[in-house]
Image 1 (cartoon, one colour):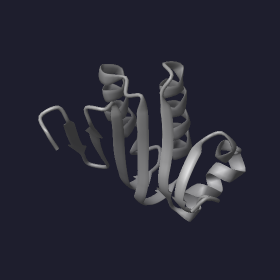
Image 2 (cartoon, helix red, strand yellow):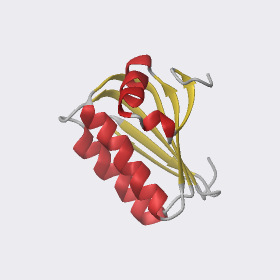
Image 3 (tube, helix red, strand yellow):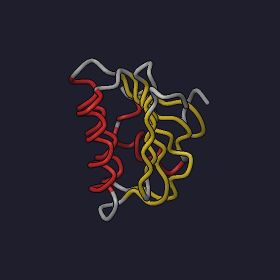
Amino acid sequence: MNGNEMALNYKQVSVTLDEDGECVCFLRGELDHHSVKEIREVIDGKLIDYRPTSVVFDLDEVTFTDSAGLGLVLGRYTRISSYGGKLMLINVPDDFMKILRLSGADRFLTIRGRGSKTA
């Protein structure tokens, strides 16, 4: 990381932002109604401050998710899309992918790795 990049670590999310405007959010642990509020606040703070053009959610270390985790992703998708940014999910665990498919979100989200069809 050079001087123009920013990193933030918080219990279940690490956020890095580089000088090219790409933001990578590394999510870990359980994404449920107990955890998503704080995760959402951390991510939204960076989205508001920096308005990154490209946001990547790396879900490799997510161990569980439910509808609250889905809501976290869809809410960030809406926020990022509202200013012309793009969201990509990578390393999506199979259980999370199942929720994305059941909800139909896999039809409009960009998904790469593990449970995705393009893995």
